[in-house]
Image (cartoon, rainbow, N blue to C red; front, side):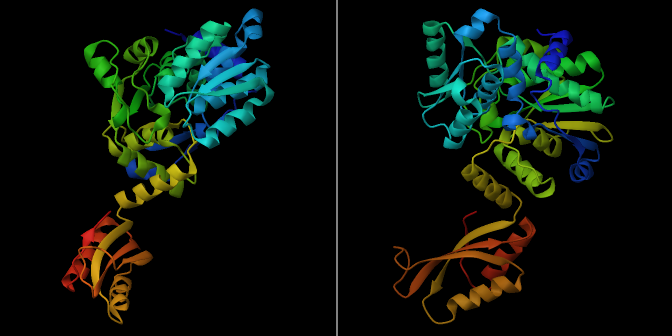
Length: 405
């Protein structure tokens, strides 16, 4: 396992390259949890995530022969961008393998960060295919592989976030950090436990990619058959042996949150904190809000580890969060095709202080009579109670309502 001296050395290396990101109190989340919550805005880091810390620490530690040979990496997004920027900063040639279906925005960002120092290879349908191809290139070309988490230099680089938290908030009681492959958690836990042994470190995984709790129960690394989560930044099937040991020794607790809870946290951060967090960046906030972590009265730091999210995915997440909060209602009903039918139901919706987003007619629906139309409404509401009250009022007026979301 890495030690505090490794993290401190990494801090000296990344100074001037990785930015010292803000640590700010969140009144909204503090009030919701009866704790003193401060958010660590690593989503404002260069490349939009913490990954530049580990990538730069690894690449700047290479000897002359390794620099000349160049590096190879595999990633679907954040790690790719971190390696690309590190390549530009160090002048080391990098080849990065990304899945063919990687988000175009992330491929373009990787290219822009790396410039002439980076070559992108699109291969395979997912990260595992890209990883396998990168390992082949490592052997063929003699390049140094920059692993996203199973590397002591990478873990130490990520741990510099923990040093920054303690520098600004030395009396912090609990630090909450996302866990994917475990590099960030291993690094942060190492820094925190060495500097402040009484501070708790809580790891958070996405339900559709959780492997740590099972690994801890078994006493060995457990690998999932597959992953499925909106938190793609932590969508790994397993942690590494090295990160497992660090988490087992230095992380106090690991909890799991589901995608709905993550979407709610992302929406709250967007609306109330005016910041965009990707799924991996929001899971610590979801855990603070949704799990009993025993933080009442404590000073707590959830780490927003990244903000790189595709615009289409963000739109879906916002809609999911609105639905979960009862602020968006989609329902279907049948209206007789006569003058005033649409006005009548629209008036009723308005009288119950709901706002209509959109209306869709379908006169060709097979289950609808010739003199009627199937009509779908998208409505803005204030809460789940408000939504339920509106549905009951419509049904009381004789409308047959089918709630779609």
